Image 1 (cartoon, rainbow, N blue to C red):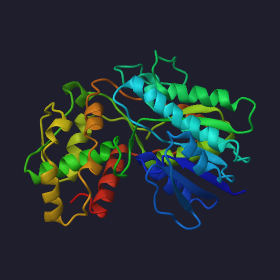
Image 2 (tube, rainbow, N blue to C red; image 1 turned 60 degrees about the vertical axis):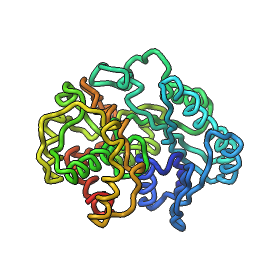
Image 3 (spheres, helix red, strand yellow; image 1 turned 90 degrees about the vertical axis):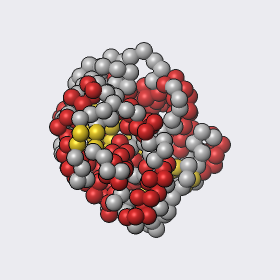
Length: 350
């Protein structure tokens, strides 16, 4: 039986890798939704531009997608405060389900992408390792509201749901506000261009905290597994690379990859120090013959500052997914090298 995936948020770090993974599988066709649309791959991937905050536009653009069997919801709208995140992110999910459920009669699964915000990891020190059955924290939290909506909507229906909870996701997609690996690569490239050592810019305590990340390719495999495995139906799963690290150990290795000396950490806001670096970026592109990627496309500075500010342990227990049958893992150090190499191949960085 052919599977038809509707990837909602197909142009982000997570969505890009998910679309590529699904398109590589022999029994899947893919439809990607995003605000900008994209380039179709005949017979494999079709892109649709849609405003998910507009219920009429969503209904209109999805009305003909009658053959969709799996919805993979990985969309996200940023807002200035945690409370302001709830309304748009819940509305987009509701609009998609309201539009697709009546027309896709063969719908079998809706997958929801979450994160450690469910555990309050963004608020400060939280219980580690975090587990899927940990008690909730005081709202607002849109991840919780989205899952509650799916749980209630699924009652009595033939389709099932799953929720994936990755750590910070590592990938090489550009134009995303939450891309740590690209931020590090650009920060290192600019440091080298300016002839300065690579300093860890986060809080002093963050240099020694115990962390984990999630490779975008690994997450894509886990997402498809959870959407198709009977043992994963109607459950949430933490998805991580499977190893732990401290920046104090990893940072010098990342610097070495770029041929940079590493000086002692210096707490500084990347958002502030990068505010005047666009001319340097353009000059770097000219001198190294790089593609004309805009500085905005590679700038995830607020997110990098956020991650580098975690002066507390940040990891979860992913053994539930292994017990249910998902056994993939990725070495985090090698993940970074792979992303940097991909950016170099694409002539995004020198």
